[in-house]
Image 1 (spheres, helix red, strand yellow):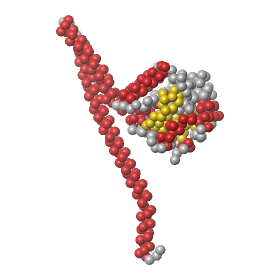
Image 2 (image 1 turned 60 degrees about the vertical axis):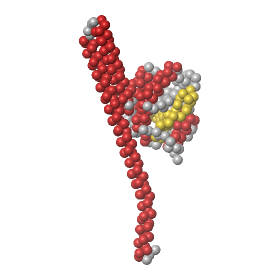
Image 3 (image 1 turned 180 degrees about the vertical axis):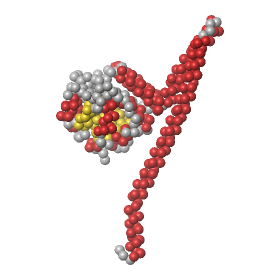
Image 4 (image 1 turned 120 degrees about the vertical axis):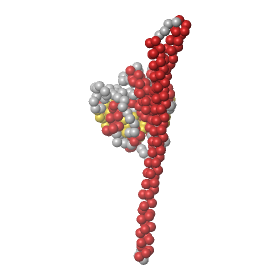
Length: 340
């Protein structure tokens, strides 16, 4: 049975000196010996405070342009995490260490490979601004529409997963889009995912957020749409196709009205309308074909996984029966020679 020794508590940080010491100390106090803080070049003493509290601290490579939370998480998973289970959280003291078992138990029991903590289940007053709540609602709704799965709170920074499952993911986000990519990859790769309720605490007064609700929100929305290309191509191409086709229809109606009612011809606009309509129809057809290819590829991947699992089970069964077969052969030889 897995326990806390098999868990790496992963905390990406940037200028979290006001809270990181308490965060690390609280998880060490809960019995987590492997606390990894990967820091993005803080200049406020975050690394020193984390190390004093008992964490293993590494500095994110290439800090500066192109670095961010996503790059830190990818680097940590690729280079530094050695334990089979990962508990990931932010270093801003908004997540409770005594709720870690809620996220880890589904992994330990084999019920899930990825667990997301739902902040909206128990959110303290003032923990999230009204603007951020609206933004989160829009993003979660967009995720469920685009990717066909309702995971309630895909932007939650408190989550747990198996290292084996996350290494299947194609993660490329540098900033706060990393949680979105993880959620999409869970759906795309068929990783069993569950959501558990957690408490989302108010950020301490002397701690400032690194999240910009507008720029980072736009990045997250673009990440959702970009990843639909390989997970839901019908939506990715079809949405543009519908807009193009509808624009062509509207322009065509205008041209027809001007010709038949007013008696004025608009050849250029008519050409644009026809082009938009044809382009939209082509994109819709391409989206349907792409969706069929993706569905076929998923089915083939599923069958290959089943075959690989069956072969593995048969190989294990053969290994288990080998010793007994050898003992029977030795017994038969002993009987034929008359010796024990």
